[in-house]
Every structure is written in structure tokens, then in C-alpha cells.
Amino acid sequence: MRTQVGIVGAGPAGLLLSHLLHLNGIESVVLEARSRAYVEGRIRAGVLEHPVEQLLNDTGVGDRMRAEGLPHEGVILRTEGRDHRIDFKGLTGKHVMVYSQHKIVQDLIAARLAAGGNIQFEATGVSLQGVRTDTPYILYEQGGRQHRLDCAIIAGCDGFHGISRETIPAPARQSFEREYPFGWLGILADAAPSSEELVYASHDRGFALLSMRSPTVSRLYLQCAPDEDIANWSDDRIWGELRTRLARDGFVLSDGPITQKSVTPMRSFVVEPMQYGRLFLVGDAAHIVPPTGAKGLNLAAADVAVLTRALAVWFRSGVADLLDTYGETCLRRVWKAQRFSWWMTSLLHRFSDHSPFERRVQRAELDAIFGSVAASTTLAENYVGLPLIL
Ligand code: RFL
Ligand code: PHB
Image (cartoon, rainbow, N blue to C red):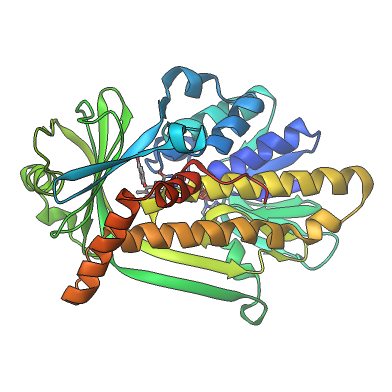
């Protein structure tokens, strides 16, 4: 099989890239290790930045998001029973969109298939060959047979645990990493959200987040140990802990059946460069942020926007300038999002090794935001999203 762009991974990055390339008249084939049902049901992110919402709308895949998504004009920071609202609309004129990542994946798969797009599910044993030549190709197995996909460009959209990043020889890449001494225990529950807006709560027992997926489904998180055993968390214990950490006078947390539970470790990670010959790393394959800033999926979409623009010029005219600066362009935004996610994480979580002095400084930093329009505006600008291409 032959195509222009071979894409590894049918997460949001790979599918959005395939969609945008198609709109630019460029052919692609997406190779995905998992089944369609698996990727369409995988519960992950929920908050879209304003520029990403616009991108989905402008490229014709925003119909269901407009119907079912929840535009949010602010978030609440809660500490010691006090609320401070960050007014996105008032401070930046923009909002964020609460809409499930797995629905975006469903919407993109539907759009690609309706347009005759080629997505190969359950393609395993993927290996990238000849990435330093003008004729790279991808080997994979499917249905018990070995296949070969020839292409001009390979996009590694296979997430943090994929094989694309490791295809770059170790001496040619540098990783920047921070692991946090905690994780997030996340639940989905059939319960009406107890707040109209997201609540980020900093509490002595640890961070908690109230989020949502729809008017009848709540998404909630608790800071926990990075290797927390989910078996130790009964539904009652989870709701009790959420009630303690989210407490405020007059606030009532409504509960309901928990339909999904998981523990996610927290990590900041960037690999440089994001390009090696004809291989381009996109999204989580190149960078991971802790979820506190709600940036991961949004960064993946920004990489896709940069790569699509560069490939459109290159395939049309052979001019490689934008392609050669792909990584540099993405990394400007990536590092700003890294800074913001690290800062939000440091601000709101309980660190067991903090001295009483450091804990007081952390509270003072929250207070400084509460008392300053300038500080609140900086937070709002970063949360609603910087322009896709900086
Ligand atoms: P993905 O989504 O991991 O997709 C990679 C795809 O590649 C496939 N794959 C392979 N295919 C073929 N061969 C191989 N060898 C392969 N190896 C892997 C995988 O099966 C998969 O289908 O990466 P992508 O596309 O870069 O998208 C990134 C986002 O998924 C991620 O950044 C976000 O989910 C992060 N994130 C959030 N981001 C936000 O912008 N806003 C949020 O509110 C938000 N909340 C979250 C999050 C991530 C979370 N978890 C579970 C990590 C909340 C959580 C709890
Ligand atoms: C979510 O709804 O899953 C979510 C919201 C905000 C975050 C992280 C995750 O910062």
C-alpha cells in the first residue's frame, strides 16, 4: 500500500491530522493498534481550549460538540472553604468547551470514514523504516499477515507509550522530565454535576477536582499516591473523600453510581527534537503534561495545526521551510503549556515533603491570585488557550 502520509495512532492527534490533511487534498493512512470500539470508548480529557473548539468547528467536525458540549465561561478555585471564580469571559472574552475526548474521537472517525478515509484498526507490531531517507515505510501486522505502507512522511501520533519516539536513536534525542509524587484517582458517575463550573480544590488532605461530561454525568478526581491501589477505594470512601476536600458552606455534592474508576500518574515530559528525517512526532508521543491545566489534548491539536500547514506547503510547492521548523514552532507553545501545567499542579496539590514554610507560601500564592485581576487574567489567558500557532 502507498500513501502520502503514514499516521501511527488513531487518538485525537492522528485522526485530526488525517482529517485536516484530507481537507488540504493530502492522502493519509492511519494505523491503530487497538480496535475501533476500544478507541471510541477510551475515557480521557474533557476540556477544549477556545482555539481548538474553533478549529473543530471551522473544519466541519463540530456539529455534535455544538449540540452536546457545555461552554464554560469560568472556573472556581476553592481553598479552605472559600471560592474564587476565574471569569474567563470577563477577563479574556473567551470560554472553554467541556466535551469528551472519546466523542471527538468518534466524530473524527465518522468524518474520515464518510470521506472515504483509510483507518486500519488492530494493526500491531508497527515499525518505522528508512525515516532518514526520502522513501520511508511502515511495517505492520494485521489479520495474521505482514503489511507494508510506503509513504513520503510518517507522523508518529502513537501517544506516550508508542514506538515512534523510540525510533529516533537515543543519542539524537533529549528528554526533559518531571515525575510528581502523586497521581489522580478519576471517576465517572451517573450524577448531575454539583456545580455549573469546574471546581479546583486545594485541601490539606490533597487536591480534588469536580468536572463533568454532561448534565447527567460527573467526572471527579482526587489526588492520591502515584501507585494507589484502586481496590482500596470503595465507592463510599471516594464520595466521602470528595465531600471532605470539596467542602464549602452551602455546597452539596450529589452522588450516584460510579461507572468508571482509574488512577493516572502525573508527569511532565518533553522530547526534543520533534522531527527526525521524515518522522514527525505529534501530541503525547512528544510531550506529556500533568492534567491540572487540561492541556494535553489541546497541545496535540496545536501540533496537528502546525504540521498540516507545513505539509500543505511542502506537498504543493516542495518548499520545506515550515516543515524544517515544525518542532521549533510547536515547542514554543509546548513549553508555555508545560510551564502553566507545572505551575497549576504545584499551586493546588499537597506535597508531603513541603515544610510548613512552603505550605504557607503555596497558600499565599493562591491568595495573590484571588486578590489580583492581573494574576487572574494570566491564569485565564493560559486556561482558555494561547493561539494554536505561536
Ligand atoms: P493518544 O490519545 O494516547 O493516542 C495514541 C494512539 O496511538 C495508539 N498506539 C499505537 N498504534 C499503533 N501502533 C502502536 N505501536 C501504538 N501505540 C499506541 C493508541 O492506541 C492510541 O489510540 O495520544 P494523542 O492522540 O497524542 O492525544 C493526546 C491526548 O489523548 C491526551 O493528551 C489527553 O487525554 C490528556 N488529558 C487532557 N487533555 C486536555 O487537553 N484536557 C483535559 O481535560 C485532559 N484531561 C487527560 C485528562 C488525560 C488523562 N489521562 C487518563 C492520561 C485527564 C486524564 C485522566
Ligand atoms: C476532565 O474533565 O477530565 C478534566 C477537567 C479539567 C482538568 C483535567 C481533567 O484540568
